[in-house]
Image 1: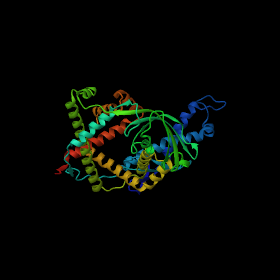
Image 2: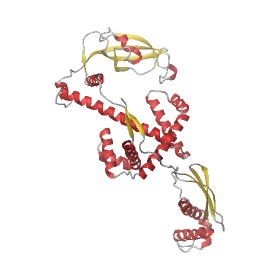
Image 3: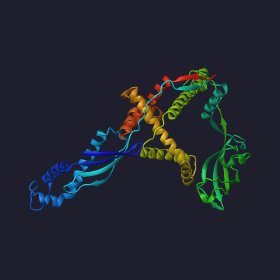
Image 4: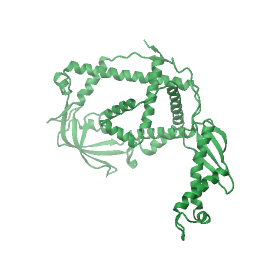
Length: 424
């Protein structure tokens, strides 16, 4: 077998492969022997048809089978001979198979970039001091009280901060623009309510109706009404006052805490743990930024394009979740094309850098690592580890999970080796 290799790009190789006629002939004869055993040709039992009739009836199938056997084998030998590490399936083209001649074809493949490791230990990073302020603790307690608030019916007009349970109809240009909602909770506060309607409800009593004019947002789902004035007919069905629980031992016990002091300590510890985690992520990001500055190399084009598509889809979904219309979201993603392409290349470079460091430092992922990560995922998702593992196995996601774990362990290693300066 003859092979030639050409560099198309830094991480793209083109193989020109030639398989001798003798090998083609040997595989062709082997294929026809197998066909002969099952061939259905009128007048002949399977296994007894003459060669000329086999060729007449099955030449196309035989050629396809010969190519199916020889091309993968030829490509495999080519990458082994040239010590190339592919990172994607090959694109095979220019296939030529004629009687009495060798089989020739070309195969183009993305290859693993060469990373010359150096100076990845003792990376200099800074560490900020962290603490939990009294204000932060009070904010957390306030959020907790709000989460366990009770809404009590009151027989009085709506006051600022109350909740009015209303029936709401909306009209624009004299036409209904949405279905009537008989159970809409509206906060009696301009800043906290839809289109500021809540402020207009202050002073109303149960059973009273008010018509309110308000401008629809520019991203309103029905474009023909976006940005236009609308009239809302609001009937107050109930008036509710928000009651916050007292922060005392009784409240702590509802949260399965021994007393209020235990609750406050738990809140403080949780705030500190989140800050510690954010600090760790910040230091790891410093390491990644340093690696990207120190290692400059090209990445496989097709891999970069696929990664950019993943990032673009993620950005689009985030925009859609914020209520931005699909066309506008797609436009914004196009505007970010250059930035997404750069981010995709950086992400791939980091993958190869960390992977090579992991190999050099013999950082591996074992079953215990995978089980621990699955338990964590299961806990966050409110599922059993067994169900999560079955899902990952079914969707062939365990390999990707192992790569994530290896990357995390490598970053932990680099953080442990880094030179950390604590900020005053």
